[in-house]
Every structure is written in C-alpha cells, then in structure tokens.
Image (cartoon, rainbow, N blue to C red; front, side, top):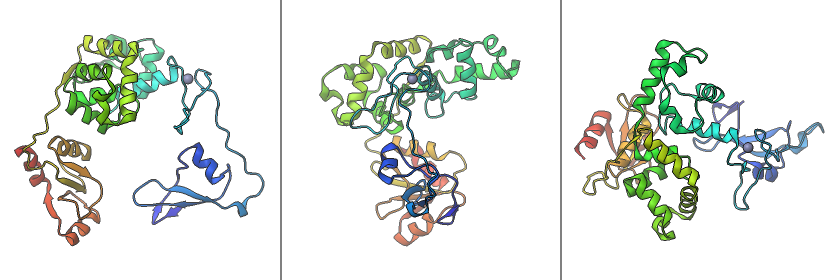
Length: 323
Ligand SMILES: [Zn+2]
C-alpha cells in the first residue's frame, strides 16, 4: 500500500480505546493517513465494504505469561500485568537493562538473555556482572572467542553514566529525557533516592506523574536492594557533565539533517543537551542552527529560506568542544 509516496505495510491503531472509538474489526477495510513523519494511523473504517465476516478484537483479560488478571488504572490506557513476580516482565526488564539506551552491553540481546535465564545463570541485573566465560561457553552458538567478547563487553559497561543508570532501572514514566534531567539535578543515585523518600516537593518540578512514580519505585525495598546489589557488583556511576551556565549554546536550538560522520544522531543530541542547548526535529523560525551532514533532507532548503544559520559537522563539533 502506498501512502503519501511511501510504501506502508503496517499502520497503528494505538490502543484499545482507539479501536473502540473507530469501531474497527478484524478484516475491515480502513482509511490510513500519514501526518508528517509519524507512523501512519488508521483514521476511519469503511463500514460499507464489510462482508459480514469481520470479527471483533478480543483483548486478553489475563496475563498470557503468569495468568494473573490484568489491570488498568482509570486514567491509563494500557492493560498491565500487576504481578511483580511475572516472569515475562522480569525478562523484558532484563532486555531493557542491557539495551542500547540503558547499559548498552554490546552483544547481549534478548536471545542470549533468554538462554541465561533458562540456564538459571541470571535472575536480576547484578547477575550479568558476575558472568564468566565458563558460564557462556555452554550456551548455544558460543565459542571461546564470543564468550570472551561478551565478558569484556559486560566489564566495559560497568562504567555507566548516571542518566543511563537511572533509565536502566525501568521506572515507569522515566524515559531517556527524564533520566537526563534527573541526572543533571541529583548528581548521584543516592541523592535521587533520598529525594524520593522525602516530601512531595523534593521532586515536584519533575511533574506529578514522574514524581509519584519515582517515589513509588524507591519505596519498594526490592528495588532499593537491586540498586545496592548493582553497586556491590562493581558498577561505577559516572557523574553527569554539568551544564555550563555560561555556555554560548545555552538555550540555543539545533536541528540536524543528514548523516554525520563521526557521531550518531542520538549522540549529537546528547552532546547538545549537555551543552545546555535543545535538539529539535523540525526546522522553524525558532531554530538557531541547522547542522548539515551527508544527504540532507528538505530541512536544508527550509532553513535557507528562513535564513537560519547553517553549519557543517566540523563547525558543530568545534562548538561543542569549546563549551
Ligand atoms: Zn504476568
């Protein structure tokens, strides 16, 4: 299917509420729209094209992994398994912990984590850091070399930035950006933990939902123990580079287009943030700088028309270094 000049094989229905609102059934013919760069969405059902064979969506009421009845708080839209010992959730949490934006343990993906769980080699994050080559060699498709590589990747990941450490904990509503803000504000995980144990005000500027979620998370003794176990396993948390208030980049907005040679888009965004600037996705009158890499998009044309300062990668990197 081609939508807006792009071939589309899937479109989002978002969630159960949206499916109910649209009245969509399995087998329906639907209208799909694509707005900006976002994933195409189903916007309307062509009820006049129904054959009568369409079926209603049936949502599970119990967790397929642990058979606990699912729950959904009034103000939320996602059904969740409330069982803290649910094996499927533990598994997902370990995937998240090792993932790129968290501890970024190279070569430790879901397939290997599954094997490690099945062999009872790990049950919580701190266990990753006790793995030895001998443990890994018994796993499928592991040789001496790959085992040694994984052990050294794990060892390498023991030094971790505070924001990644916070993100890795999997606290609900604490995504990448919030984790960065928390790291800038609290400097150490202990300070964050103390703030979580204090009055409501101590975290109030992070927003009600985030603050509630963090307090709730640290209130759970199991979570606190998990943090302690990680520190005991030899995790070294690196202090966040402080935003320099005098920085020339402070408050400046950056948009990147095209591919940069020396750093990824995500790394560039992180550097901008650490320098006090704001990375944005779309060029507008408010953009201060457009950073141009290889194969720039129409953003370049737009920036020219708006008279925005256009810089190349080298200039961009020099600006960051000078901070
Ligand atoms: Zn479950």
